[in-house]
Image (cartoon, rainbow, N blue to C red; front, side, top):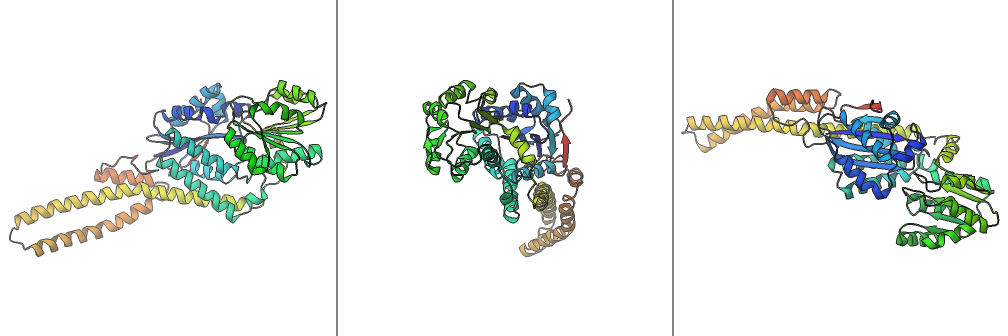
Length: 445
């Protein structure tokens, strides 16, 4: 089995492409199902956040066609020419795909380096794939290993404590805009991890009236209670906007949830009082026309990214990257050893069967042997075989830890006609598995 990833992120993908490729929660199950139906794809997980869209697949057979097939499907989803996706994508195979996911989980590939919201987002992606029936032991094991690496990096370094989240960066801009958040009235629309974080940080910043709305009335009410905010129903949002100084959106909706007309009407009632709008949605939650309204400042993810670009990265990023490399190497070693296990087991089983067959023929030719003699004969033969097989077994395990491991395993299969498939049941067990680590630009059109 081969792990393949196709990644589009803020680092090398234009914002307008990311916006169209983003997969909100509502259609995610359908997109996962279509990805899962692609040829050679056995498992698939889709990670779609405010600054990245990444597909991780466990594929049987050659991995080469998988990235192009994924790119074609995502282009159709985003209604984009496939060439735009291919140019903006990065393809990674095997160990390179694993190491990239580990880096993502540690917040090292985030717009806000060190941010920890990505952990919840990866877990949510894994749950969505499980709910859609598109994941299995290979990607589950990969994600579990990535989350362990993240926990270790965040425990053993200061990347989380030194880093800054997208939400906090956006609120820094709001703070600078108003000269402080104290006593400002704020409305938050969205009850996911980013919306709840925004509400908590606003409360800590000393805002006045804090109101919270979401698509799920139950979740919104619970989140509002947790931060001492007023829970807004859909019909209450317009009136709340008329009184607000700050509006933050992070809904995961496929279409804008705040229109220019809504804001225009609210501002008319506010007698020209300034409104700061922080749109953390991808695709955007707020109609871009809002930014052209009088007394309204609209800050989107691109603006937040420019603000973050001026900040120094956390001091211990190199230490965190070293942990990622170490954990990824250990993961690859485990997969390689797992790949060797069925081949070695098949070799031992074949030799034992041959020995048992020959012993049976020998005992048939010597019917006068006592039961003790038969047992001692069998024990001697098996003891010799164990000694003969010990060195090849040790060497086979050693060889699988090197870059040519799959070649040795395949030679062992061919030499002894073991009948173990190259893409057997163990993760990373074929010649295109984690041993073939590649980090490439997007597949060619």
